[in-house]
Every structure is written in structure tokens, then in C-alpha cells.
Length: 72
Image 1 (cartoon, rainbow, N blue to C red):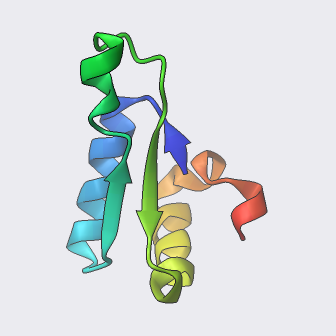
Image 2: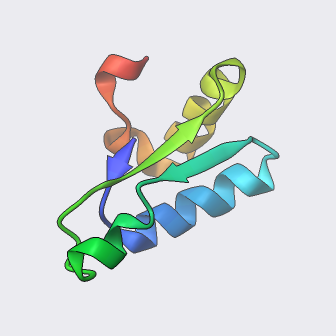
């Protein structure tokens, strides 16, 4: 998924950590270059073997609309 909403990123990261799902927040340091205006979206990446579990967890938690439809 991609978002520039820091609250959403924090919530999703907490859910993934709580479930023991390995993940990475990509493009997190771009805010230094952009001046923290939120123009660049951050990407939340999970390992391919944990993709289905992460997608199910996030959908169950109400983040289904945030997920990219083409990544299913």
C-alpha cells in the first residue's frame, strides 16, 4: 500500500508488528528532502510469503480501501 498519512502508516505498522509480520516502510526518509509537506507517499512492503496474511489482517482491521487492488 501507499499513503502519505502518518497516522495510517503508524497504525498499520503497529498491526503488522503485533501480528509478527515482517514489513518495511519505504521512502520514509524522503520527507527530509521534501521538507515534510507530505507530497511523497510512503510504501508499506511485506514479504511475498506473508502477503496474504498481511492483506487479511489489514482488511479485517478496516484498511481494505487503503490496499492496492492490483496487488491481490
